[in-house]
Image (cartoon, rainbow, N blue to C red; front, side):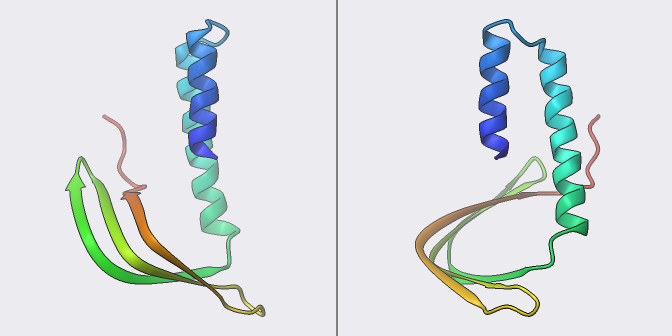
Length: 100
């Protein structure tokens, strides 16, 4: 969802139908809203495991590439779902870091 929003905003800025400052404001609000929703509304749990092929930490962003990964999703009161993938890239950043 976030990448689609970014693409749409980029297109609008390129076409001069949206001011770049407003586009940045929209993305900032999206990040805040998603963080709040994930913190307060999501009750499912996901566990994953796999062979760690590559990892990197740069500019407070972790990047992991797992091979032969398994994701196990559990919702309270529901069945567990297992998904297996050959390769997956996980990108994570600290949500508490503030902009300078």
